[in-house]
Length: 81
Image (cartoon, rainbow, N blue to C red; front, side, top):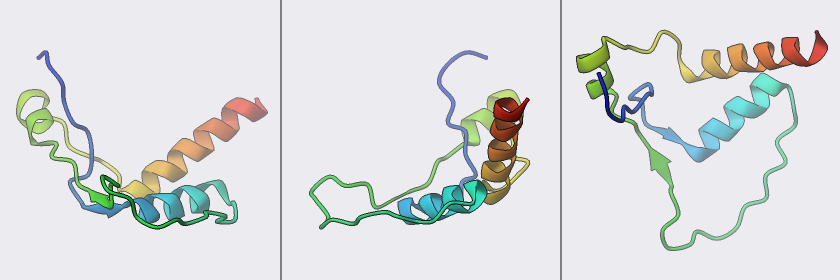
């Protein structure tokens, strides 16, 4: 199959939730500085991966938290090896 495919959980996730999951998986303190919302700011997002499922048979195997944890562990193994 050719084309562009969205890959995601299909679960709406806020930028703050993503930030929290990244900090948790990297075991770092949250230090974000917040500003007022501006026109055009992305407040939340949900990806529709139905085309990837239909054309490729793809489905997510892990949730966002597990995915960030697996990615962080892999990166640590590359840095420390």
